[in-house]
Image 1 (cartoon, rainbow, N blue to C red):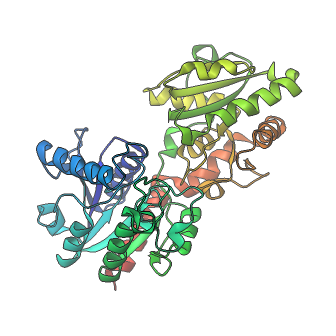
Image 2 (cartoon, one colour):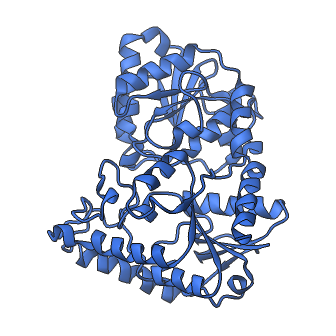
Image 3 (cartoon, rainbow, N blue to C red):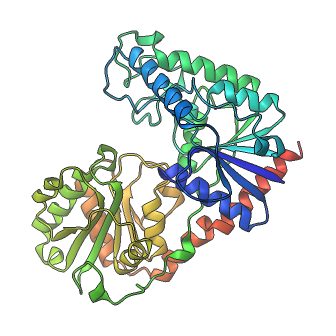
Length: 416
């Protein structure tokens, strides 16, 4: 069996990271797997770039210009939608010619157009499409949030501002996707049951072939005890650490204000608990002053590039906190549990695939700081063994476990 994974990048963004992890998980399982990308930034010999810098820029710029034109030349929400009307024809690439399975991942912003996917089908390739967000099941948006227009034919898109209403770009691209899905057999792989539920609601994918397989995580890299002494970690020794991390903490989707409000509720109502704790944040933040209104003991570590330090922080923490407003499959919760942390988050996304409410974690009411505060207090007083939390995620999200599920799916597809 030969597999080619297709993704926009091999290292930039969450989809890139988990796609390359999947490639190596499959290779370790004995599957001849390679990765074809638009933007290569690693020296991985199993990854190839599909086209040159000039072509990449032109395709990216053309799509953004079309979005601008269809958006009343309004820059707002410019990167919350994609059209897939530009891309690289990879059907003649030597790796693709040899492949039995082409595994699409995040293919937007110039990687593949919808027509390029048709060309893969005409070249005789079996296509599997791993979904890292909602784009496959909507007209143009990557995250629909509270909008339900994807259950019909889109149109009236809240991310488009050109006043065309039902005849906007979201309706146009919805029609193009509908024609593609009718003509090309594609097996879709949402990374969580929550996302699979959105597929069943979608007018585009409600009848599609769908199999849920989570992202692979390097669970073996996370231990329940730090590799260095506590006084060598950038936390206050002897405190119960509540950890929250993101690539960009103040990205609106991460819901940082809800975390701050929840911690302040604890500081005011339970000062004795707050005195024994420390909230530790890691990741970029454009306006560090946002944390100044915290009344809870805290520190911000900024961006951390040392993966060993991140692992040690998980192992030294009591709670892994996420107040994201939308997460397909929250990676920090999985990594935190692999390090022995108790997860607390909103129940909006793939969290139910990771932990069980009031057993191995706490799912707070959506957008309720009071409920998040209650979840943190619950986690601080419940004695859940760190090894149990670690073992829970290893069983489902280790590279070996995920590779086995993909191999079973690939074999099933090839037999038909």
